Amino acid sequence: MTSPIRPTDDEARHLARTLMREARFAALGVIGDDGCPLVTRVAFGLSPEGQPISLISTLSAHTRALQGNPACSLMVGEPGIKGDPLTHPRLSLQGRVRFVSNSGEEHDRLASHYLQSHPKAKLYIGFADFAFIRLELASGHLNGGFGKAFHLTPEDLMPGQ
Image (cartoon, rainbow, N blue to C red; front, side, top):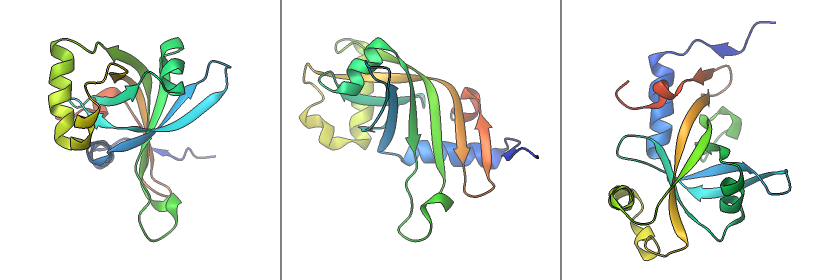
């Protein structure tokens, strides 16, 4: 059988970067404390360098899971209003998260940048139970619609590459 995965090209890279740039939330998949998968919705943004980030609460089950096992997956891309949801593009990102300290230059820089795309986060961004996470990318999997599947490297996903 022929592989359904196409060779990665500039069009696939552009679509993946666009999905990341336009996303304001994502589905986050983690491995829970009990070893079972857990999927939840989280806010999604990009760092000034283009790396996926999120602002999450330490009170949530997914944060506790990430503290125990930082491996995770994020999916961005929403179905359009019309048509079959499976024909709309989506991007799955795999990697490991790194927690950013609530104090210091890195947090301040991320907060300033994040608030440009998530202005309502100003209400809680300074709360002690909220922290930024950065996804250290390992791979990406783009489904651009039927017959348009691509594997992407971290370099494929970063702007300006």
